[in-house]
Image 1 (tube, one colour):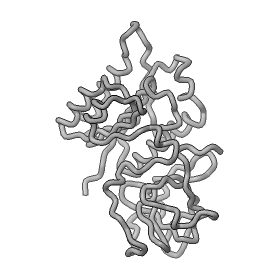
Image 2 (spheres, rainbow, N blue to C red; image 1 turned 180 degrees about the vertical axis):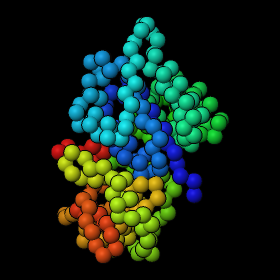
Image 3 (cartoon, one colour; image 1 turned 45 degrees about the vertical axis):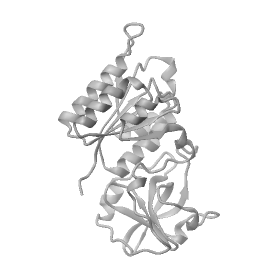
Image 4 (cartoon, one colour; image 1 turned 60 degrees about the vertical axis):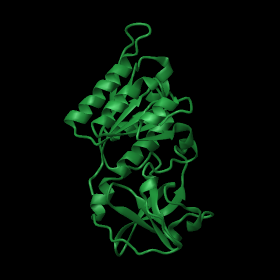
Length: 260
């Protein structure tokens, strides 16, 4: 199986609600290798103050985010669009990404998306309800940002296999240390992932591109039960150990960005 190599580009001037970015980046880490994360905007603009909140910047800096400052030089000219388009081309040619994730609803990116897809690169767009039909039709997959407020569904939800009440257990191929190295806790000490598959007695949380993290029915925090979980649900959890290695405990559903 070919591992996804993802370049994540954010048009901050088009998406001023910064709370969406955290679950999107987490999902990118779960879906494959995040090769680059670049945010574009005029960071001196008061309109983008939400992107500079400490809880946002600290988390993004842990993931190696690049803040590309694009000052507005001429009225009516969006330099951020040009800079983002150029970065997409660089990622496609030099970093050998096979997926570009674009956070924007700007229809001006439609020609760029067509070109990237012509070159064999999938383009996943996260945009607001105001995104045009042309933009939605141009990309490989389109996801509404508004839906992130009630829990992000896995971008790869269409790829996961359905499971019945019980299913065969999978052996985790990575060591406990390797799995732990892929996880980054939030400022409350909770880890985040997405339910990969779930049955009546146990399930698996997707925490990286290859290895799932096991949890049992007794690891789900009350009053929720394992029957309340579905594949693709965003969850937060703590880490514990059993005889076989790391497991997730205190598993519970989470909103896209949960307050402390």
